[in-house]
Length: 316
Image 1: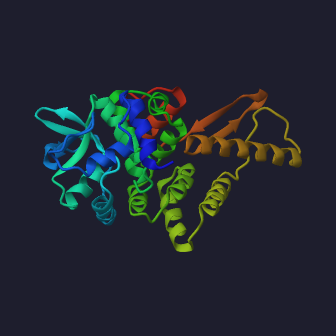
Image 2 (image 1 turned 30 degrees about the vertical axis):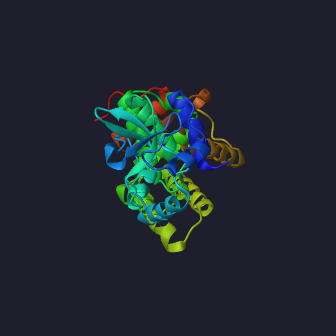
Image 3 (image 1 turned 180 degrees about the horizontal axis):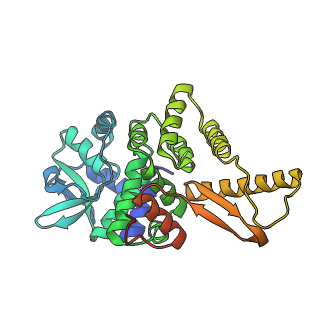
């Protein structure tokens, strides 16, 4: 099953109407502008169409656009553009790469379907269309999620339900925005993978994250190796034994076992929350869980993750 068909079903679910089949679209795209069109498709002049204002993609690969342009010349446009009316013009809902490629190919007109869609549906379609593209920068995906959550004051669970995707996909991408700008730039340039970047999140400390980023490049570390080294660094920083108040000193073996269990629980919490977590045990089974954050944005993310609602204010 190809990408275009998957996207078609996504648009159908979000916009509520079936799309014309790809075969009908292909036949229509090869006709002259003045020919009669199949029902549901119109021919629009390329300069009648405005870009989608909610498009998360900022960088377009010109080589890929040129390749798609050559494909359009040979095979026509297999999937029509999807647009909505915007005053006397039209606004793109889906298909910006195809539109750019058509302009590059010298086309004056392109096949399009006109759909009714509000701004929120436009945002959702733009996210879905770009999620299905492997070449979209993960930070661009993350920003599209974050902007949507802020614009419509909804939770990650609500957005996941509307897009029919797993909530962890949203959470894992948004967490990348907490990394230092130098590391984010490395992700944008393709020098650091999303897997490597996620492995750095439990460190919590910006200096440590930057140091590990340099080490990943210098030693060509795999994602698995990076995860293991990060865990070692965290365990090394937490070598101090946890104190138990008001109890008799335990035997050495029991103490080691308790520390190992506490360290394992701390690591589990750090992985789940994506930040440094300290577990402090006291007598009678009591204790504290200390969750660290370094920026107001990280606090809001943790608050939303723990409380299950969109943040309304920031710390400090």
